[in-house]
Length: 261
Ligand SMILES: [Zn+2]
Image 1 (cartoon, rainbow, N blue to C red):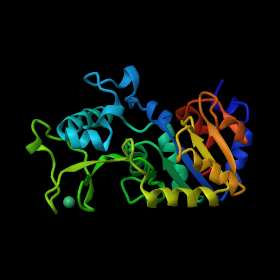
Image 2 (image 1 turned 120 degrees about the vertical axis):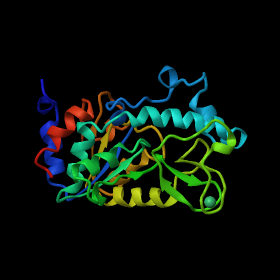
Image 3 (image 1 turned 90 degrees about the vertical axis):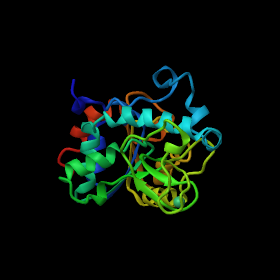
Image 4 (image 1 turned 30 degrees about the horizontal axis):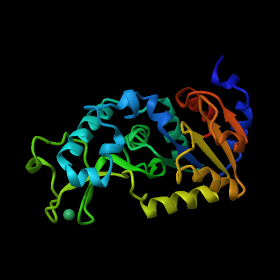
């Protein structure tokens, strides 16, 4: 049985085909299909620390070297991962005629990589995602507004080796949203603006449990649009979706979006 045999497949395609504006919300499931570890539970244990003990402003103040060492290890794992057919189908969809915006909860940069691959390395703004939780491959200054892409390994032998801001000399940190921190207000308001005006919100690989990201599809629905869900299992959002396709995004999306670019 292929994706096109899934219950609701044609209905989902018709909804997407007739929509001029589409918001996409992607989550951890899309990354997991590329082999990105969840960094939770057994899968994510590093020196017996839990993410909640390291991904906080408090942990970074207390021991920034340790937190950077953990991020360097995570970045190394993620650097080995490539976008999967789901990322690529979304990038092609976003580069097409429709007004499509990808909003992601993922910090691994794989949507951006897919956009660059699909667009042949040219500037691919329409396929560039709004990253609700930041990017693990960007760094930002702890004092000023300096912020740049950064993929290379981080030296973490001692505090003195840690990366410093070339503008003000303060310590740099991963440009991700930590536990206890607010999401970037500009990114969040843009995500809601996009979601509210979208005729369809395509939700892929997320259990839609974590707010405020989970509110994105609700904004589309409140704006009169419909929700199309692609997820291997039922989620809290399923009852609110017009169609739910039970499958992996890497398998379903290439067929679902084929010809809709
Ligand atoms: Zn600075």
